[in-house]
Image (cartoon, rainbow over all chains, first blue to last red; front, side, top):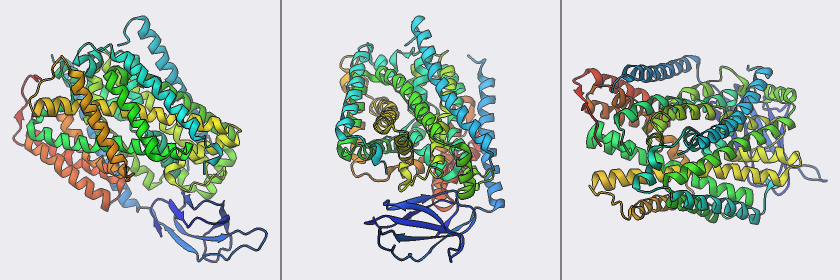
Length: 114
Length: 39
Length: 474
């Protein structure tokens, strides 16, 4: 899965029991972070920095041992490259400035007219 | 990164500003009503 | 999930019906102020500053504002909220427009009048198509949001909830015309502002800022990033989308006509100032979701989910559900009524009057205006039934309305113009903008629409321009 803004919506079939969602920056899950534990059928993850992120799920059974981990899902976060960003931002600024400028000058020019 | 204090100030400012908005509208309403300028 | 603050269907119905009866009753009462069709459609043309500012602000606070602002904050962080707030600039800039509108069209009725007189039949047709797509998708997306919200908050079946919201709005608009719309908008605006402050304040008390910030910088760092590309791009795109929406739509033009000439500019400027902090006040609660361990399963429900969870933790379970429902109902109603009135006016004056050449009889005008309001309401209801993602259409209309920005400016302030060239700019801007939406990304669409149209409109000023008529007579 690819993301250009660090946001990704993860969904899974509605579980019978609670599930546990883990995140890590390596596929071996060496330093895992538990993102969510509960009965919801999905989770919206946002704010991820650029890079590779891995997610995996498992069912949490009490008191029996928890189910097996699912295969890891790789999410690649890559932001727009700087050059393109600056180009688009400049274009945006130009259009906005011209628009506002034209309105303001038009207003002051026609204010005195009958 | 936006700093913690920036964030705190931004949020508090926004909430106060929103509250002032309600007060402003009510004040104006009262004023317009008194001057019979409501509608 | 928001089960913790779910209110019973009975409570949900009670709130809806209480507020509904209140609005319809006031609609009936205030509707009697309208002594003629002009009074009904334009509230006597002398609305004052308080009511004028409130109606402009409340109409711009839609359910999208209260629902999307948290979503923007959740996905785009700090810049996301600020980007959303830039939509206020559209209202601020309508202030100088209001001056000019009163000067050029002292007895004007609709935005359609302006387009027809400045751009002829073809320009007016293009305008009508764009504004109907935009207005209907806005109306329908709010009706859908209302039904969905009532279902998730109060367990009221979608069809019943959505129908009731629409029926209430149609009824009081029908009885009371613009007087009812503006009057109820004031009450709704106060409820919205106070409600957002209460919810925001409660979230603040439940939040340890230091801890929350730590959590965000560790697990959701992009949200705090200053150079976050997606969020930065949203700023200009949102601004231009907002310009396009406000500059062209009859919802704002009709308000300008309804207010006194000296009041209109001040009211729009004030409304912009009042609106600016709302996306931040309503949106920031989404930043608390991660730190407070609140899981968001459906991005569209971010606002209500976080608000309910936080308030439930504060021991305010049922109160939370009621408050959220009331605030959201008011933000929907204040926009739905304005859209119903403005869109039916446009159809009435422009199609019935302008296109078909029929006059509005002073005797029995209420039946005709009423018919148009019911027509628009019915079409909305039918489109809202299948619960399609109409909000996508609303976003796609960004480049469409964006391409109208410069033609409006030119028509208001310039002396001459190559009209066919300007109209070509609208069509190309719309087409290229929609293409950009699907190929480059949503955050470029309105920019492309506005930019392309801007180039053509500027060209139209210098390449074989023909003078506009000196006087605009409606």
